[in-house]
Image (cartoon, rainbow, N blue to C red):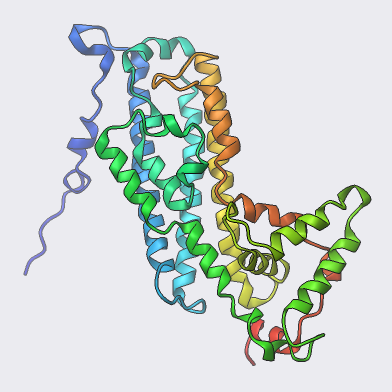
Length: 342
């Protein structure tokens, strides 16, 4: 069977894309506001990139949600690769603000009032990205306002997304099943026959490394690694596993898990950078005025930036690192498992 001839513009459906910019300012025979074209195209580009991010995240969730994930298979390498691609896209989203900032406040005022009540806050794709990563409804800034500006169909799409297992939840489960801590045979030549003695040793070294002004960190260590609290996203067991990966990431077996954790932190970092740049842009454009969708503008964005860090608990683990020269020596059976098989 002969393959159908594919033409560039047909394949990309350029006719739909190129003619998808309807300027509000030129309706009813008015003179178009020049910068409205830029405004529309940038936001359309954002939504296309949001679609790609969701495509990557859904693929990652599909892998991580399997009953069993082989950490030594190409699957985990693909997960890390797709998360790194997501990070690169997020960097592009931050850089696109440079283009938006070529529009002056007066240029924006040429058409801003015509947009009400439309707002970037109504981007259901971005809300789905946050939900699938692990930002829960109860942790959001301005919960009452969160869905008040959306159509019912879009609200349902977001609620459906929040019902599924998020990346944060699946990462917690993945960390909890780290096998090394539950196998007594690995620790039989250590100071006892379980991993508890390892953590006791580590806690002692950590406490000895604290300056006088940091002594309250000792209680924080106990709370984070020895107790479970409902308001925490990562369990004590998952937190210990994540810290272990950070401490001993030089071992070949832990290199990929460490890259995965770093990807999660960088996703949060890039989302934070995007929000920060967005705040500065909004303040430059409209000052202290409310947003077109009715939010408090820059004030809302500032509060959201402080509150919407999804993997904050992973970043907090850096508070419990110690000098690598003081790391407890691992049992030989464990170090052999973490290294290359000979």
